[in-house]
Length: 281
Image (spheres, rainbow, N blue to C red):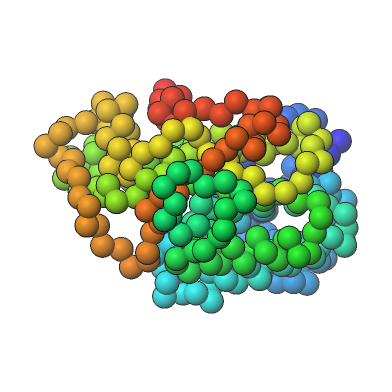
């Protein structure tokens, strides 16, 4: 029986992995919150790994507040880079395979077509820089790892774009949503199942992979489809804007090319609108 540590158990991806774990009864899971295992504390991580015989560590813990990261770079790097170093070293010392979640924000968004795993990274905000640093640390420390770059993650859990739009729509609020950025909304439940599938097939094809649902949208497109599918769409309440001011710079294009993931793991990826519909139903 494979034993799997999942960090970030209270986050949306952590909760989705917990749901998905019910489909993998042959795995033994240990879901840890920040309070139960502080990954920023090197000795705590080292002690936990030495006392528990693990096969895999899924690092779903992250500092994800893109806006606040600009004014809290130390906090972002502490979680997204330094804590990742603690985990990577522990994985190396105990022969544990690391599955780490990264982001489309490692790219600058200037490319006109979807990004591949081999494209040059060049983050334009603190969050993206901190996540890239985490990736680099893993690559320098480990041979046995999977880094999954994903985009525009949402689910039924936590604070995310999907839940915010549903909330505001039901309240009848007027919304102006940007058309400046293009990406792929990705259902965290799909990501969770795909992560566990990598473990289930015992893949040794380590490296960096892009993972998202298929298709592309602006944030305005995403909002409109959410409203339509939840029967909350009122065209008088939703407006486009191409000048939405944010503290952090955002990539204009962060669509990911997922062919490597699909071909390597023989996994057909779901269109984002279909996946959204499945979540709502």
